[in-house]
Image 1 (spheres, one colour):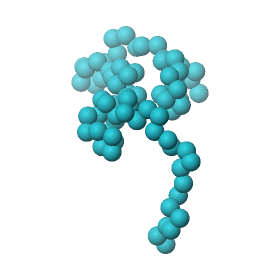
Image 2: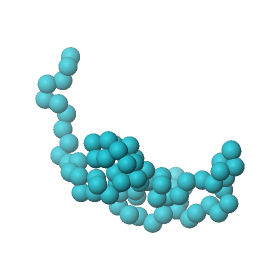
Image 3: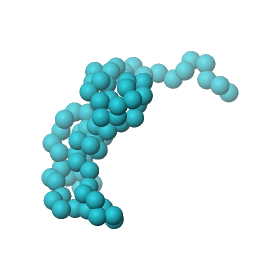
Image 4: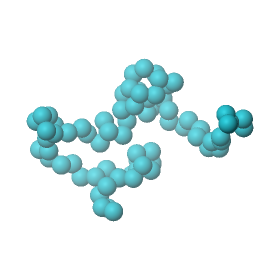
Length: 74
């Protein structure tokens, strides 16, 4: 694995960002997204309909213990 590639844990732990790729463009000529846009732009409407606000509102949301339904549909 490439050491500069962030892991899923990096987005939540605040690990160092990979170096920016200056001048990189997509196939339509638009600039690529920033690290912050990639890691903080969400659409979890349980927190808010404003996708740029979800990361801040979800800080500290307890995800453990996370359990399966005790009565799964068979």
